Length: 269
Ligand code: CTP
Ligand code: MG
Image (cartoon, rainbow, N blue to C red; front, side):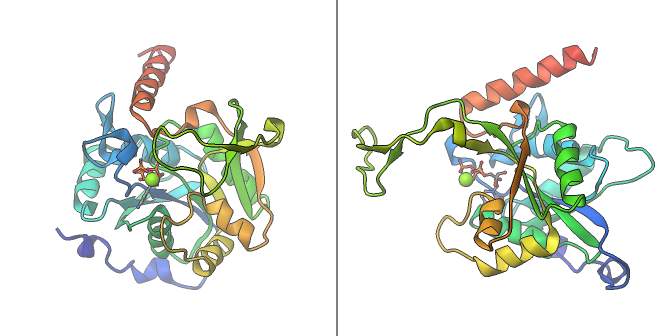
């Protein structure tokens, strides 16, 4: 099956403009290569304890009370494979509701991929959570808390943690050759810094507007809330969770599998 057929039109029943936009959906950008993780399959397809990272991430979102739709943004050319993986790995049972999962192909940058996911949302979605597939172990309580804060009226909500390392600022033109000493320009007050995570939650119209207004070339934005800030819309932080860390480098895989092992022990398996 081609990507195009998987990205086909959404049934008109869900595209209808009648009725309020009351649903909460999640967009899961999973189209990155994972260059920093080293050679291998696209990062979201790499396994953690035998299950692909993106399946862990979809399950984490599907467990949230509010989420009734997950749009997975697959690696370009990989949508059919992702659809097959999702069909092989069922979602957890949720009380009284089924979670719909759509798959669309991604783009060159994270920002492109998120925009493609937003384009696939049906009209009845009013709240959107954007969550990195590379944060497969986010606890359901964090997802629920972000969704609840948006549903309570905040247009943009971001989970965040205090920064533990001291951060140094360097100049934009500092020697970029690896190993070359870089002059330090400043040391920001660490107590005023936060490290942000996902899912980031938004009023749908606000996020769509931000993505339409700031289509940047190059790398694009690494964070959706940053685009919303540029619109002048307030963004608020709520407490994140250490298990919502991003799998970026090889050591993160070791940590993720250790977290899963600890959960298994605690859950009595
Ligand atoms: N992402 C995406 N489309 C892209 C690039 C990134 O959907 N073109 C997604 C990744 O799949 C990931 C999330 O955005 O879930 C966060 O990006 P990051 O951790 O940087 O993942 P990669 O871009 O895959 O990793 P790297 O930067 O090391 O290549
Ligand atoms: Mg990246």
